[in-house]
Length: 114
Image (cartoon, rainbow, N blue to C red; front, side):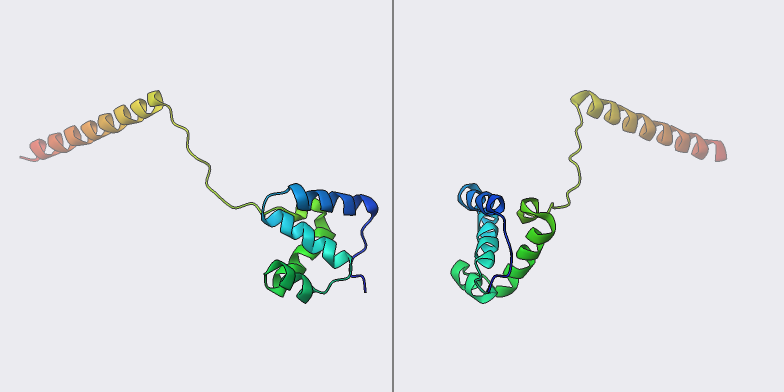
């Protein structure tokens, strides 16, 4: 029983991907190819040494998104701040200036109360 119909072009692309992609993407391409050949989820999982519940989501992602769906989902990360030495110096000078102004204002307030 065939669970997924692939065109010749899709089969070629998935075979190429299974041989050239790195790590998990190659395994995901094999999952899709073997599923299209009629292998059960349990058989595919046994061949790849993973859990059967790992296979189905990747086959579904392929059905919905094609080959791009086999890539790792993007991971959230904060953008790295880029600060030049000149920027850091300007920030440092500003902080020192503000601290000095706050100190002087406090001293003046203290002396004016006496």
